[in-house]
Structures are given as C-alpha cells and as structure tokens.
Length: 473
Image 1: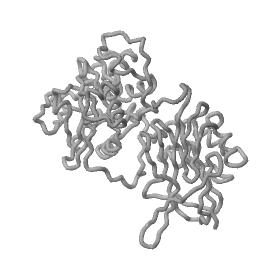
Image 2: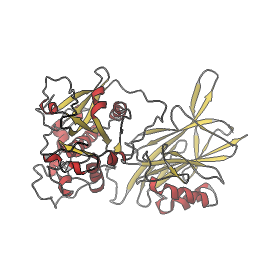
Image 3: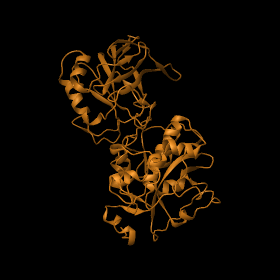
Image 4: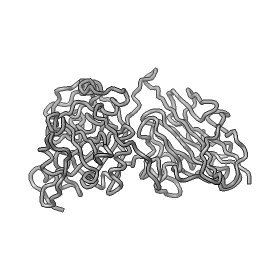
C-alpha cells in the first residue's frame, strides 16, 4: 500500500483506508454494514424503469466546507431528497432545503470531529441513526469552529444504513434498483484531479485512472439514471456553480470502475401519534399458490380468513404434499423490521427470511449478511424469490409466521425460535411464550379476509401474522 504525506498521513494509519475530499474508505468496516434486502433472490433481477430523475426533489446544491462531503451527502442530500419525494414536493430547492435538510455540521460537532478530518459513510450514517441530527433551518450558520449547540434537541430520523453493493457485486444494477424505488444512494467514488474542474460543458465525468497519482475519495449522491445514456446522474457538494448546476453525469462503466462503497439510509417513522410513548406498525402477507397448467406456471393468491389474534386460515383446504407456493410480504410504514419462518408441530422452525443468512446451530445470528430492516414503507418481498417456490414436504399442519416490529429482530430471533421449539401447546400459546414482553397485545386491527393489520400501541414491539396450512397425502 502506498503511503501518502500531508493531509493523508493520518488516513494511512487506518487499515486499508484512504482519505481525500472528506471520505475515508475501509473495506473491512464497510463490508460489515448489513446488506440491503433484495427481493429477487439470486437467479433473476427485476425489470427497471428506463429513466429515473429525482433531481427535482433535491435541496439547493450546497458547497461543502473542508472535508465534509460525507456529512453533506447523507444528512443534507440523501435525507432531504427522500422526504421531498414522500411529500411530493418538487421543483422548489429552497423550500426543500428549508423543510427537510438536516445540518451537515451538527453531527460532526457532536462526534467531536472537525472539518479537516474525513469520515466513513457508515460512521456518519450510524451516528445519525443512533444520535440524531437537527434541522439546518435551526442552525443555518453553524460551522466547524463553533461549539455544539445545546438548546436544540436532535431527532432520530433515519435507521441504520444498509449496504447497496460490495466489491464487484453488480454495482450499477443494484444502485439503479434502489434509486428506482426513490432511495437515493450515497456512494464513495475514487476520483482524479479533473473532477474538481468539471464544467457545465462536460457531458460526463470520465475518470482517468493513474496509479501514480494520489486518489481522491469523495462522497456524492446518485439521484437518477438514464438507460439510453447508460449513465447515472449525481448530486455533488461543490455548490450550484460547479458542473451542471451542482450535478454531473457518469457512465455506468466508469461508475463500476471507481465506485468503492454505497449505502441507502432508510427513514424512521416520524409521523406523530396520539401520545409520546405510542408507536405505529403495519404489514400485509399473501400466500400465492403455484401450479402448472401444462402450458405455463400459474400464480394465484389464495384467499384467507381471520380466526383470532392474527391467526389466519386459507379458504382452500385440499392442499397436497408437493404443492408449491410463494409468500409475498409488505411493510406499510417506514423503519419496520421483518422476519419470516415456518414450523410444524414437533419440528424446529425453519427460517425463510432473512434468506442469505449464515447459520450457527441452525439459526440466524446478529451478524447476518442480509438485514431484517425493510428499506422503505411499502417494500415488497417475494419469498423465497420470484423464480423459486416453497414446497409442502409432508402431509401435516404447517404454520407460516411473519414477524413485524418497530425494533431489530435478528439478534433475538434465535432465542425466539428456541422458545417456540420448547413450548408445548397451540401456535398462539407458543408465540406468546416465545415473544414475551415484546409481543404487542393491544391496539391491533386485523383485516377479516386479507392477512393484514395496523396497530397503534404503547407496550411491546412485535406483531405476528400467522397462517395455518393443512395438507393431506
């Protein structure tokens, strides 16, 4: 590894880390960020729109001070864009900045950092999730030379970051996928000196890789793409007089070559409720039967009916060994967590989501590759994937359970499943014992002929939806 001097000396003390323009990239640290969920499994990729452009929902392109590109890209850029998209506020950068931009300087001060030191994407994003931020409108003149304001209380408005890609993991495709959903992707790029001098006349930024030159690592926000141009549109933090009014384009091939890291920042549920200690939660769940009619594979949603307390039963009763099905789940509020498992009486539960989970003793661990955090409200998962099916292996009564929560589930999931396994009785008795104080027992409304619920509650944080499937030989 080459050792750089001057401002880069401190960065070289970090393992495999390089600093410039305000971004520090450590591949070991970045690869520990939980992976964003991919609804397609491994075999296929969903069709994407040909063009996406969220730039009308961007705040005023800001000019960073010092090495603060990471803070500007996360707190100022990515957060405000998501909120503007949700609010359908477009073509008014001043209003978007005033209503939705968070201070990029406040989190640096609260971390005890200065504007000369760069930061990792995951460090700033984690800090925003754990400690919150304040509105830029409340501290518009705050600088890194100021003391931390103490009369303003920060708000926790985002969840932990999720990793979009790593190494050579189809960087362009998965960046396009999340951007198409309205989730701007904060990326770290390895640039060259020509980037600073980019003008409006440049159609694209074209990095010239020079292994003898000092690499410049810089954080920006992907806000769109164009399949005809084969390029991304990105928001920079050099102000509106740089590039194309503060934005620039980069070809997919160049992006794949120089992109080092990328994250999305799921929003927390910030909608006010009736009381300060109340929470909201909601979710839906469909059972899709797959059958071959001799010409093609047919997918039919099977109608359920509600029995009691989140337990549903399918209207169809004649399920056979070997029948195939898929599960389709959907979160309904931002910042929700979800896990899916099934079990039969006398058998150990079988986890279906998170899917690419390394198992220890047959159960998922907290260090899973795939997260239980849904990246946005309305995020739909097909389990196991659109091209795969779950199969009824033996004639018995099976239960499929989806856990929705306002808090992380994965770390506690092994204990939940073990308590399920050890507890005798019917499925609801077993769930009550397994979930304990985390079970929400009041304030839930279940739909009678659709596996769906909405809840406003004060105690607990998990609501299960359970489907009973009876099959015969």
